[in-house]
Length: 304
Image 1 (cartoon, helix red, strand yellow):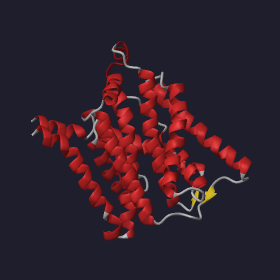
Image 2 (cartoon, one colour):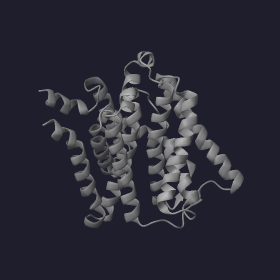
Image 3 (cartoon, rainbow, N blue to C red):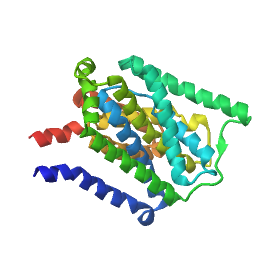
Image 4 (cartoon, rainbow, N blue to C red):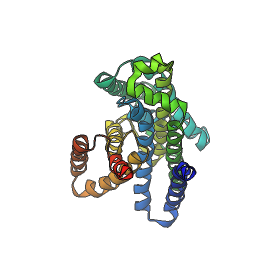
């Protein structure tokens, strides 16, 4: 029984990846676009929860890492092969996360959240300034892009890697250290955990997946600009999806990403502001009645 339970996450992951991989060849272009959006937010929410769910640090820097990956992709797309472009997007985001983490990870709560958001805005304006000084315009036109199927499978691989990493980290000593920091950081220090190094490593890891997702998704637009790829909406939606699904769990953010991606497409055309109203309402209800997110529901059923 224990062996079966231990293997179940990998069975679910393998099955889900196989089913999702068939979408571009079996479904319409519209359905494939929705599935791509689901996969993007699965990658972002799962990687965000990997660090923030365990440590209880509320990071609002996801859109910064996503945008850096997108700009790395736009810059290197005609120079490097596609896999290296994705890796460069992840590497650039990780390097910036290490510098950002070294500066602000000694703070917690509101101060950390506000500073990560402020640094995201600083990066967006810095990129805008450099664009104006170097090219004289803001934004880049993407002329050479891979096929839609290649982009879809790339984002699928990133989402699968994010989930697999979350599973492995949760069962490792590194994951225990992150959870210890979330429970009581001072006590973790007294037990010999190098909390500063662990926090920076975890922050860089979650940034790598956001940067890779940004690098892959950049080619979905023929023209990218800082206001689009550094949009605060990407970061806020990632945080809300993770919190509503249950940031401390692995399956919760995945389910929430699928549900809210579908809601977004359904409500965006009929009620332009309805989606955000539903998202806000669900967040309020979760905070009031399900503090650990939707994952609380099946955890209760398992205990019963």
